[in-house]
Length: 138
Image (cartoon, rainbow, N blue to C red; front, side):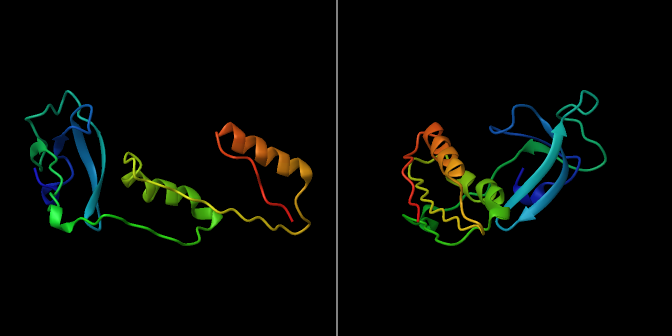
C-alpha cells in the first residue's frame, strides 16, 4: 500500500507498527502523512475490511540518494511557548542519528532580576542532566 492510497478504515501494518492498525484519519503534512489509528479489532481482522480501504503494509516513498545533502543547519529564535513543538516536530527526524548536534544559548533577563536561589537551582538542574553548570551572570 502506498502512502497516497491510505484512507479511513484501511488496515495497515509495517515494521514501525507492533500490530495491525485501523486508519481513522489521514492528514497530509508536506511530503509526509500523519495517521491517526487504533489497533485492529477482532471484528475487523487483517484481510477483511469495512466499507472502504485496502489491506496492506505502509510503504513510505523512497527518496533517491541524489536528493540527499551532507548537512542541514538552522539558526533561529524559538519562543518559550514553542519549545515543545520544536522538540516534537523538528528533532525526532534526526534524533536517532549520531550526527545530530544541538547547541542552545539561553539568556534570561526578567524584570526584577534573578535570585541567587534560582541561579543555584539552574546549576543543579544542569548537573542532573549531565551538563556543565557554569553560567554567566551579570
